[in-house]
Amino acid sequence: MLRNQSIITYAVWIVLVVASLGAFALGDLMIGTVGMATLALTVAPAVMAERFHLRIPIYFYAGVVLFLFGTVFLGEAFDFYERFWWWDIALHGTSAVGFGVVGVVLTLLMFEGNRYDAPAYAVAGIAFAFAVTIGTMWEIFEFGMDQIFGLNMQKSGLMDTMTDLIVDCVGAALGAASGYAFLRGRSRYGLSGMIAEFINRNRRYYRRASEKKSDSRD
Image (cartoon, rainbow, N blue to C red; front, side):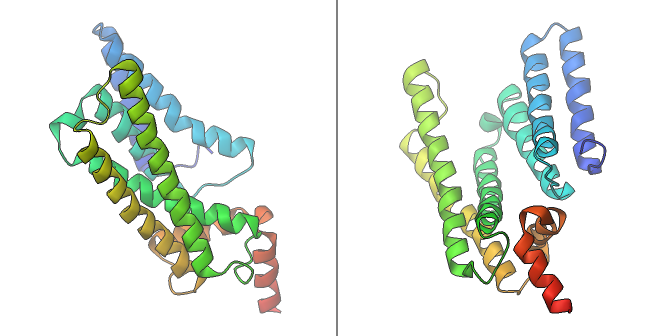
């Protein structure tokens, strides 16, 4: 899995290694540690996918790597959350879209990929709820960290939380809509294309989808 990634993923890994080693050489333990932690987080999905014999589309994986890079390394180590007012909003939006897509894939997994047993509107609804739930749990985590450890993860408090939740809902809706379009056969590009590619790459978990495709060819 680590050998077959996009140029974007390899570029991020190289930046993290070089930045971390450079930081350690200059005595900046914080930057070095955060960099190595980010590297570990970006490699972990590939290792887990290999463990469970999953094949993740390379561009979706690149998106995951970029998200972790932007959240942990640039956001925390280089304080991008304070430097750019839109940084937090952008990351919340993109993560919500990603979780919406993941929600579609997981829901279809329960039906073994049979789109006829999985109504498009139901799959989209479950995917939307899944993505919004993840976003809500993150906001609860931020609140807890602020209250227990005196941090400032919520920034402006209620306004920051509500803005994040609204952005999460919009992103989740986009991710869920891509699943709806895929199930209705209206799109095979963009996010819908990623869903189709994931199913094609992991047919052992979507047997009924593969069987239906074989039957249609016969």
